[in-house]
Length: 417
Image 1 (tube, rainbow, N blue to C red):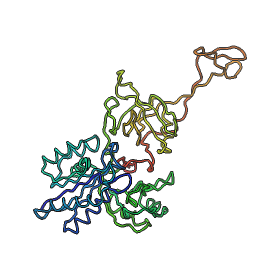
Image 2 (image 1 turned 90 degrees about the vertical axis):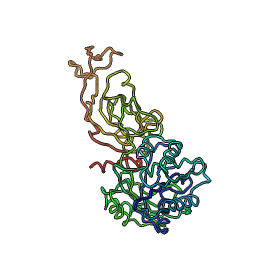
Image 3 (image 1 turned 180 degrees about the vertical axis):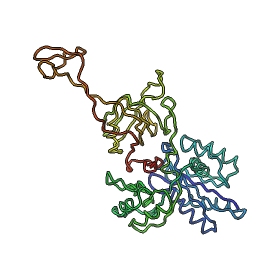
Image 4 (image 1 turned 180 degrees about the horizontal axis):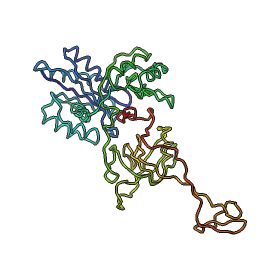
């Protein structure tokens, strides 16, 4: 007896549907056809992919293979579901289905997670591996479907997803207080259902897709326990996926000189320009490479904490030149979009004031640019200001964006404890 891996991707659109919903349907259809499902896998891929709809998710369903024609039967069931439910009227929806007997190439999954793959690369790999596959329209979904059947997680979490009808146009009915209760009862074993600091429910989407809510946690038992507290409209169906969400699997360790647009990184640096707040409340600062002393390594890199990161921006505003930090986030449009930072060490923060006149005991005033200071009363001059160390407003250690701003793949700090 072997196993069949069925991958699906790119069935949704900004106007509706969800590939994870199709995964739940696929499990039901396969079980009705006599298959035994052994794994339900939700695979998040590069969050910077230009053609992603929302969270860039693909699914892989693993089933037992008992008969010689099981692979062809599973392929037929999956393709029929895509024909029935995919958002084909949307130009950007280009589904893909892949069915194989084993992991094709974990390297393809890693590349789709941290870099970019082409349709041609996917088709070549599928053809050489003997997999069954089908792509619709321009066939872009073959990339995610191939990555899904190739996925092997070094770290993993779980998510229970409850769905309503994909054709529902009504406002989702989920009692907010019960979600806060679920988080209180199960945190830190579940996380990111709510954002306590900002009093926001995070796990209920506002997009036109069939997801009613989703609870993330460290085991099926914990997400199911959290789910038991939630009161909502009657879900159409529910499923528990194993997933790479909350693992930082997308991050690449690198240095500032070698980063590429559209990838996500962990980078060490020294703060070289302190934070400023721009239009819209977005906060930026700059770092340079902390490990190298050559001129090229002094090229500054802009780091951004956007308005949706809320209180995290105050951490960023508390950084000072000379602070040694590690930044995590995606490099897009010449800046790192921050997901979290680690403050390795804090530089002394000094405040400078005009010195006090030793004779008059009054503060001096500036004598002009680069001319030091002068007492207005007696004329005594001084060349240096009075300096004192200011207590820092931030502490060494990890600091993260709030749940309301967290990406699917970004690891919450609670998982580090």
